[in-house]
Image (spheres, each protein chain N blue to C red):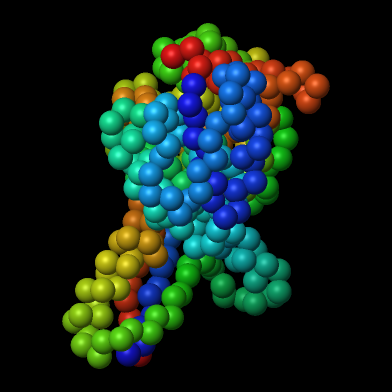
Length: 79
Length: 227
């Protein structure tokens, strides 16, 4: 099965890259954009079809490597 | 001194470290590959050099921190062994859990590559005994992710326990005047709980020879040899 892992910066932390992108979007006259924060998406293919097992495995992957939980949150999505 | 310099794919400042250590200690350190599982017998200093290990993929230092040799480095540090992480090495130490906190993208988004003044916060550790407390030194910086941060509790603990090693300052030692990356409390380097692990963004290893602009970094390596 396939899953997406989405890693985002925690709220309140300065995201200078997001700010730069936000500034660029605003300079393109795209009215209505108020705030941009940048994150990462990992597309992961898994050997199992068991949703609970996949969830547990990806949680461990996030805690061990994919996210730095000091400054990042993660969520796991199945398509 | 039997020093070991760890070599990751993408390390590029190891020869500067080797030169600085050889000059201070009179013998060349061992180069240890990241895929090794053990440090050489009798190692009394481990250095993680600067560079861009694994191309800074995922997060700076993240993949290097999970390489086989880092288990040996963690075990070595747990027994009180001295570990020095410079620049990318500091990022690897944070990612490996040997030091708290994280190094974020510089707040002004610029890669900072220039000379920088630092204030030496304490002179009673194995890394700084040849400096004086509050001494202002001039060394090189070269990083895009040196913006040190941690949660408020961790910062309070670091400050309370005197674990800030160096702070960015101006030529007169004034804090808040010359922070190149937005780091909390002008932090340029921190110690582990028992001060046997030091991580810092600046490059003392580049300032050991008057031919290349100064010798303010030399005292760190002389301190390590003397302690």
